Amino acid sequence: MTLPPFSPAVERPWRDGWPLPARTDDANGWTTGGCWLYCRREGVRVLWIGSVRTPGAAGDVYACGPCIAELDHMVRLQSHGRDEPPDGTGGTDSGTGTGTCGHRRIGRLGGRVRCRDCGRQIRL
Image (cartoon, rainbow, N blue to C red):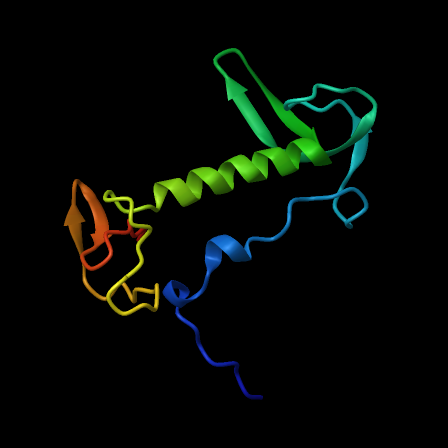
């Protein structure tokens, strides 16, 4: 058996390779009920997306497809914005024209671990 070539995570476009948000009839455990997220509709197809705890109670959270897609969109925007370097350059190396950085030199900058070359935050 031949193993596929190893590709370090830093070389993979992980943010753009996330799976699509859940959709009705995609083999997940959809049920009919109320959406706990943005639309608050009742009697729609919903998927369990996790549980929530408040100081006095705990419960299961269900959401419909459009609300899951909206939540997915918001998380992606937050993730893209959080990974921007402080100077707002987007982490591209305009000198070489390649637009990529191997993140070979990392260190603490501004209290966070960042690439010393492009400034992008690195999560270890």
